Image 1: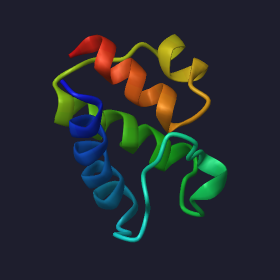
Image 2: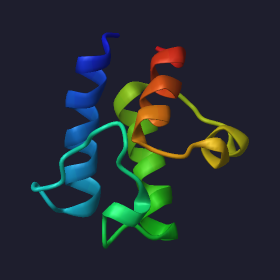
Image 3: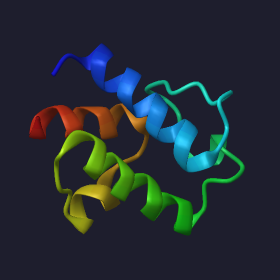
Image 4: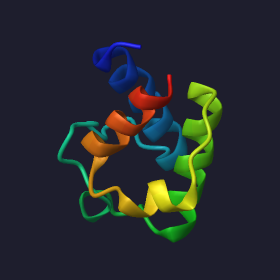
Length: 79
Protein backbone atom coordinates (compact mmCIF):
# COMPACT_ATOMS: atom_id res chain seq x y z
CA UNK A 1 0.00 0.00 0.00
CA UNK A 2 1.31 3.44 -0.95
CA UNK A 3 2.21 5.89 1.81
CA UNK A 4 -0.29 8.44 0.48
CA UNK A 5 -3.07 5.82 0.64
CA UNK A 6 -2.18 5.02 4.24
CA UNK A 7 -2.28 8.70 5.21
CA UNK A 8 -5.63 9.13 3.47
CA UNK A 9 -7.18 6.16 5.25
CA UNK A 10 -5.51 7.04 8.56
CA UNK A 11 -6.92 10.57 8.34
CA UNK A 12 -10.40 9.03 8.27
CA UNK A 13 -9.51 6.92 11.31
CA UNK A 14 -8.32 9.98 13.24
CA UNK A 15 -11.40 11.99 12.28
CA UNK A 16 -13.64 9.12 13.42
CA UNK A 17 -11.84 8.33 16.69
CA UNK A 18 -11.47 11.95 17.78
CA UNK A 19 -14.70 13.18 16.15
CA UNK A 20 -12.72 16.11 14.74
CA UNK A 21 -12.47 16.63 10.98
CA UNK A 22 -9.96 19.45 11.42
CA UNK A 23 -7.11 17.13 12.48
CA UNK A 24 -4.35 17.18 9.87
CA UNK A 25 -2.61 13.82 9.92
CA UNK A 26 1.06 14.40 9.17
CA UNK A 27 4.30 12.52 9.95
CA UNK A 28 5.29 14.66 12.95
CA UNK A 29 1.85 14.55 14.64
CA UNK A 30 1.96 13.27 18.24
CA UNK A 31 -0.50 12.84 21.08
CA UNK A 32 0.66 16.22 22.43
CA UNK A 33 -0.81 17.87 19.32
CA UNK A 34 -4.36 16.55 19.80
CA UNK A 35 -6.19 17.66 22.95
CA UNK A 36 -8.47 14.61 23.09
CA UNK A 37 -5.63 12.11 22.58
CA UNK A 38 -5.41 10.32 25.93
CA UNK A 39 -4.76 6.70 26.89
CA UNK A 40 -8.33 5.59 26.15
CA UNK A 41 -8.50 7.29 22.76
CA UNK A 42 -5.03 5.89 21.98
CA UNK A 43 -6.38 2.37 22.40
CA UNK A 44 -9.41 3.22 20.25
CA UNK A 45 -7.09 4.68 17.62
CA UNK A 46 -4.94 1.55 17.48
CA UNK A 47 -7.93 -0.81 17.38
CA UNK A 48 -9.67 1.25 14.69
CA UNK A 49 -6.48 1.35 12.62
CA UNK A 50 -6.08 -2.43 12.98
CA UNK A 51 -9.60 -2.89 11.67
CA UNK A 52 -9.22 -0.35 8.84
CA UNK A 53 -5.93 -1.83 7.59
CA UNK A 54 -6.65 -5.48 8.46
CA UNK A 55 -3.47 -5.80 10.53
CA UNK A 56 -2.54 -6.53 14.16
CA UNK A 57 0.01 -4.64 16.26
CA UNK A 58 1.84 -5.92 19.31
CA UNK A 59 1.94 -3.84 22.47
CA UNK A 60 5.72 -3.50 22.02
CA UNK A 61 5.31 -2.15 18.47
CA UNK A 62 2.80 0.46 19.63
CA UNK A 63 4.92 1.43 22.65
CA UNK A 64 7.92 2.22 20.40
CA UNK A 65 6.03 4.70 18.22
CA UNK A 66 7.00 8.35 18.62
CA UNK A 67 4.75 9.96 15.99
CA UNK A 68 2.28 9.30 13.20
CA UNK A 69 5.08 8.93 10.64
CA UNK A 70 6.39 5.91 12.54
CA UNK A 71 2.83 4.56 12.79
CA UNK A 72 2.48 4.86 9.01
CA UNK A 73 5.79 3.03 8.54
CA UNK A 74 4.57 0.26 10.85
CA UNK A 75 1.28 -0.04 8.96
CA UNK A 76 3.14 -0.11 5.66
CA UNK A 77 5.40 -2.90 6.90
CA UNK A 78 2.33 -5.04 7.63
CA UNK A 79 0.30 -4.41 4.46
